[in-house]
Image 1 (cartoon, rainbow, N blue to C red):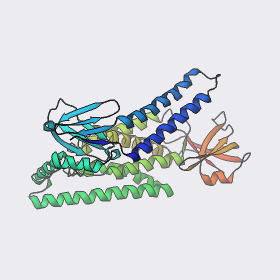
Image 2: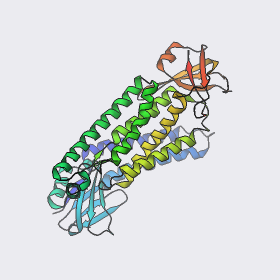
Image 3: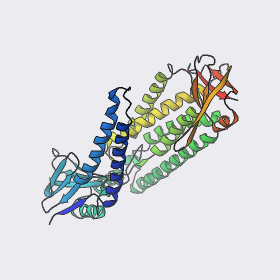
Image 4: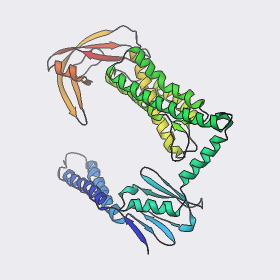
Amino acid sequence: MDQEYRISSGAKFLYGFYGTLTLVLSIYLFNDYNPTVTRAVQIIPVALIIISILFFVSLARGKIIISSDNIVCRRLFSRKELALNEIKGFRVGGKIIHIESTDVNKSIIRIVNYADYKDSGQLTQWLKDNCQDLDAIDLKDDQKTAMSNPGLGKNEVERIIALTRARKISYIYNVIGLTLGSIMIFFDPKFIVLLAIIYPLLGIPIMMFSGGTIKFLSKSERSIARHIELGMVLSCFFLLIVGLREYHILQTGHFWLPAFIISTLFFLLIYKTGLNHTMGQLWVQVFCMLLTSLLYGFGTTYQVNCEFDKSETKIFKATVVDHRISRGKSATYYLILSPWGPVKKEDETEVYRSLYSEVDIGDTVQVREKDGLMNIPWYIITK
């Protein structure tokens, strides 16, 4: 008898709610249409209606069927099937189950958001009972390779010690990266900024000389390698966020080239030393490396240009024309200033809450402008 797994009632309610909300929004936009505006804007509610319909069709169509002969995964626009004797094995991720075929010409069955299916635990248990866990096989092979790798030690004991050391190093690196980023939020003396610029670079030699035991990303179910992306990403993220918070770039013309050059060089370094072939999912690794590199390149450019700038400060006065608060997950404070110095029209600038609370419409503030170490003009606003 076939075993069917359909979307659970809880998932149907959640996605149905989003679908209904999208449909209501599209109807509102249709009714709120302004005939003086181009009809092209009606593409938005039409698109929302299509999305809403797809929500409901997906809920009705989504199904997994396991029979005595095959397994079928039916989704919104696809239907994939594998005979049981063609299944090579499976991999269970955080959101997706991959079922691979012994025939490389056949597509992998991907069960996306498998936790949304009713009795998903029963589904994963069936896979464990009837198919090979490919991650477990890869991990065993990786462990076997490590235990015979002379680069990790002369004997098995030394190689086990090397793996233990890699786990400690990766843990310490990630913790320090988080701590350093947190410190930057509250304190930003030059030595902290300099340390934040250097710290992601320290991950390069750590990966390079680890003998493959430390990589940028890893999956413990499949690879013996440890990962340091958390410490690297967090330090790069805070490097950029603090720069954006502290300084305002006046002209971006000279900003893009150094930012992209630094990003590219950093990407090439972490790609060369940190790519984890035993983990698989190469495109995921490359994407994460690219994102981290952009954070580092843009954050470093911001900080080096502004924090280490020794050019003369030019002081201008501006009047607060207006102000506003943008409320989302957190409040963001803005001042609209009158023209000043090289800025020839009213301009809105994000400021600290402390400054926002100290000034009112009609008050005068100081704008301190500098040329920038990398010839990228920037400024800050003070009372």
